[in-house]
Image 1 (spheres, rainbow, N blue to C red):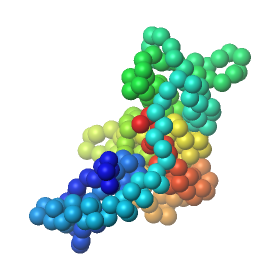
Image 2 (image 1 turned 45 degrees about the vertical axis):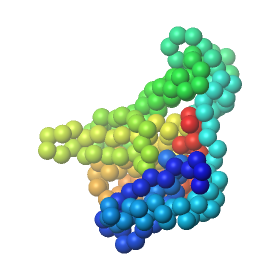
Image 3 (image 1 turned 120 degrees about the horizontal axis):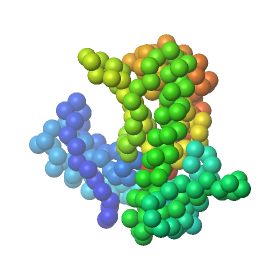
Image 4 (image 1 turned 135 degrees about the vertical axis):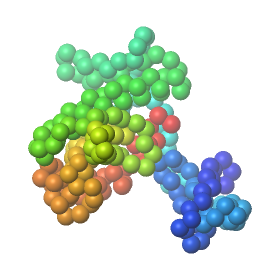
Length: 230
């Protein structure tokens, strides 16, 4: 288990000590039902060292952003390159491969590229949110992006004088456009239905059709999206 990150967690509804792999954070979570049983959870993790090593080995390798790398952005291949000045998206007039130019090295370069991807994600997802809200007949909420670890999107309908808002994971920019668009439709549907009942899914399917293939893609490839920039 050398080098593995094990996070200790208390969950009072848990009935026993347990281990699970958090694929987005790339770490093992050892859960205990109470603080006094945290040492037991730590010991259990030590005992399951082989299981932990096997689960971590199944994760996709980290993919730090670096010049020369080709990254799919909403399904379009984009070349990363070294540049000067403010990091920027370059759309060639001749129709060739788009590029992201950024300065710096190592983590500094990765942060600069991430900022460009966040701007791209915000622009595309804001536009798709507006399209879906118009189709649903609801007002367009405030849209933002973040590096969420457990959700691809979250919706807060307007309540008690607070405006509605939707937040997306910027890493949806690394998914195919159709998958990211499904997440946008999913969150917009929550503006009408705060649940996952039949009426909610009916709204989603009205917007993007059968959502099951997109959900399956996220389950299968989500960990790979979270490996980028690491």
